[in-house]
Image 1 (cartoon, rainbow, N blue to C red):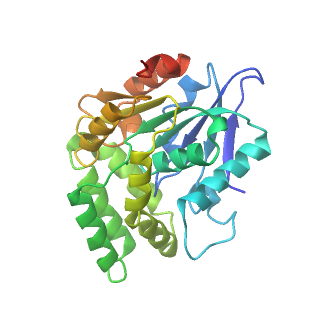
Image 2: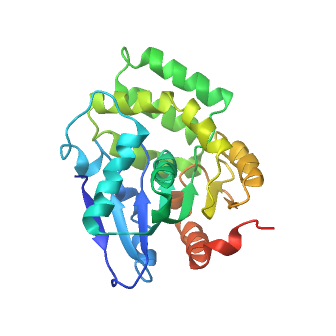
Length: 264
């Protein structure tokens, strides 16, 4: 089973489940725990191959988002969490969207931070370049390169450094598995784009998230159960760069997710 941490206020309180992105771990949520545990039960999960889940599961040669998501579902089943709000960052947003696809009845709402719901031309070129170079370049050099492309500005330094530090804890084979997973995203993202679920969804994006914000603007306009909050002077990893704003906007959304839906 995946490694996890819980902060349980009481059995009567709702759960919020936090899912990190590729190369990170549950430690990236350290600026959220204090605020969220005041009014919610909190679950933090280390995804397969990350954090303290490195050796807790049988290693597979090839990953899929369905396999990774079922790891999370196993934790929910173990803890007897029937329903929860799910908060994801970066590639973690794909995991929670996949969970909503597999078991929508468990999902009270989705919060998609630094969401990846479409790959633009630049990201496609970068991923193809990475596929060509992954066998000849040290994986950390490749990861640093991608981190600087996605989070290039000075105010992104903390997020960039955090993810690089966490990525150092990955084995090279593990990095390659996740890289291949990201490189094959197109079909799944198109499916998510075309099929909206009737679940209240908050997209919370940094205004400087040049790789992914433009597509999320279009998606949130097209999907009637979605709303977008843009955080000023902020890049891809909104929960680390602007934690106070992130926490405030997400907690406000969680109080009444349905009022954010664009209903007739």
